[in-house]
Amino acid sequence: MALLRPHRERQTSASEPVGVAAHARGVDALLRSYRDVPRDETIRLAKSTSNLFRTRDTSTRGLDVSGLTGVICVDATARTADVQGMCTYETLVAATLPYGLMPLVVPQLRTITLGGAVTGLGIESTSFRNGLPHESVLEMDVLTGDGEIVTARPEGEHADLFAAMPNSYGSLGYTTRMRIELQPVGRTVRTRNLRFSDLDRLVEVVGRIVETREWNGQAVDALDGVVFAEDEAYLVLAAFEDVVAPGSDYTGQDVYYRSLQRFEEDRLTGHDYLWRWDTDWFWCSRAFGVQHPLVRRVWPRRWRRSDVYHRIVRFENRHHVAATVDRWRGRPPLERLVQDVEIPLERTAEFLRWFLREVPMRPVWICPLRLREPDGPGSARRWPLYPIEPGRTYVNVGFWGNVPVLPGRHDGDVNRMVEHEVGRLGGHKSLYSDVYYDRETFERLHGAAEYRAVRHRYDPEHRLTDLYEKVTTR
Image (cartoon, rainbow, N blue to C red; front, side):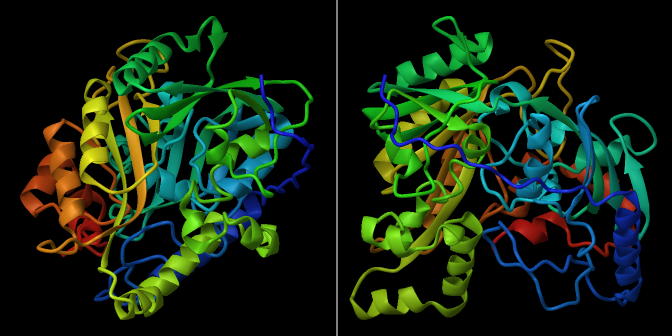
C-alpha cells in the first residue's frame, strides 16, 4: 500500500442556512424583476457566472436571483435539505458536512448550482447507485414562464412539470427552492486505484461493481475512473469510512489525477474527496500552466478553482488572445471539444477505442450511472427529456479541451463526429456545450411531444426560450 506523504487534516468552514424569511424575500425580489421585464422581451436569469460552454444571451435584462443563493435549512434527522435554486454545491456541502451528510450526488465542480444540476443534469462517482441529481429531489418550487410559482412533486397536479424539468435548461422555468435527500458521508474516503490494460476487462469489472456494489468483498460507495490510453486506464473505487484520519492533500503541489498512476491506495478527507477534481478542473488546469511545479508554487491556492479557470476561458472566447498568438505562429485553429456523453455499458469499450483512435485528446473521464431504483428493480422513474433506460447501466465519458482543425475540415466537425458515434451506439449527449443536431434529430432524442405539452401549459406565451433554440449551435 502506498499513500501520499505528508498528510494533513483540513478544516472547512460551515455554511449557515439563510432561513425561511430570507428565502421569501429572495422570491419576492425575483417576482418583482419578472414583472419589470417587458412582455416582448425574453426572460433570462441575471447570472454573473456559468458552467455552460456555449453562448449565453446577455442582451436583455435578467431576473434578480441574488437572494436565492443559499441553503434554507438542513433536517439532519430526515436527511433532507431545502435549498435555493442558485445555491452552489460548494455552499450546500459546507452546510451538510457538519452533520456528516452530503447530497446523494455531488457534481465535480464547486460552483455548479442545484438548479443547474437539476435542469441541466449532473453526474459524479455515486451515480452508479444514486442516479443523477434530479432523482434525489422530493419537491421543487418553479417560476414558470407565465410568472407563477408552482410546487411540483413526483405525483399530483404538477407532476408533468416535475418530470420534464431535468434536461430542460431553464426553458420550462426556474427552480427557486428544492427539497433534496441527503446521505451519510464518511469523515474520510479510502480509495483503491485499479489499473487496466484491456478496456473490455475494465467494462466487465464496472458491470460487476454496479450490480454487486462491492469488489473483492469490500463495499464500493463511489466509482469513477480515467482512461489515459487504450492500454492504461484506471477505476477508482471509493469507500466512505467514519474514522478520523489525515488525508492526502491535492490542493498543493500534488495533482490528483496523476496520483492514480502512482498509488494503488489512497485516503482523502470527505471534503477533499468531493472536490478532488475541482482544484485542477480535472486536468484542464494544465492549459494555463498551473500544473508546472514553478507556476503552481506562485499560483495562489484560492485561485486554483474551476470557476477561475472558466473565467479565463470566457475571457479568451471574447478576446481571442491565445488564438491570435497561435495564428501568428502558424499553428492550426482549434475546435472546442467539451462534452459529456452517456454510452451503454456494453458499447463503452467500442466508443473508447473509437475516440482514442479518432480524437487527439487524452485523458478522458469515465463514470458509470444507472437510473435510481429507490423501491427495488423496476421502480426507476422515467424522465422524458433525457430518456435513458431504467435498469440499464451507462458510462459517462467526459472529454474537455481543444483539438486542431485539420486541413479539409471545419470548426465543429469533430463535435459532429462525436454526436454521430454516440447516436450509433445508442447513447446520449449532455447539452451544456456545443450541440449540432438538426431540429428533427434533436426532438426525436429529447421527448418533443412531452416537452411541447408542458411548455404549452406553463408558458403559453413562450416567454422562455425554446429548448432547441437555447442549446444548439446554429
